[in-house]
Image (cartoon, rainbow, N blue to C red; front, side):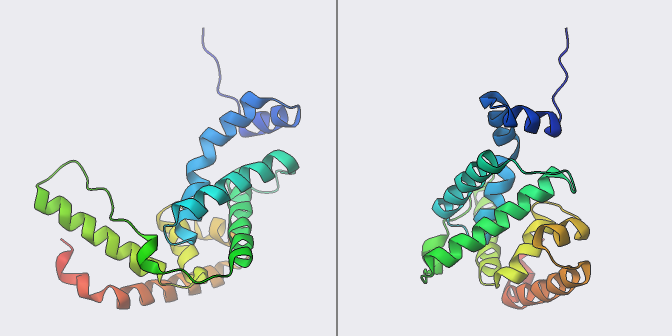
Length: 187
């Protein structure tokens, strides 16, 4: 006896009818994506990322207005980015970058020295990425963390593909400048 996995459209229909199980499934399947975008938007602030993730899924539960004009994930990313922007407007306070990051968890393979260097390198890249303005940081995160296409990034951010390309190029150049001292450390 096999059961087919319900489509996102089926899950959304079930959610509209009040199915908690369908909402839970949507949450489980998409929570990591939403958290990742928020985490990177807020420079590694787990608390803000968790708050935004919760708000996104509350919004999803309340509105359920996905029309199918784009992929569900593109629509969900757009809600997430909008919620991040709204949260930024609400908080409007300066935060210390040093408080935002904890060292990356070392990978379980390799020597202790290799793991330490990898952890340090990851932390420096995260700090460098965090110093970029959100308009440059978000295209990079969406491309290299979420693996979206330029078209999907344009849809999520509500900008043209040319603007995505321009911001990606500028962001990567700024990041390369900030991380130039690491060139000899990358194998």
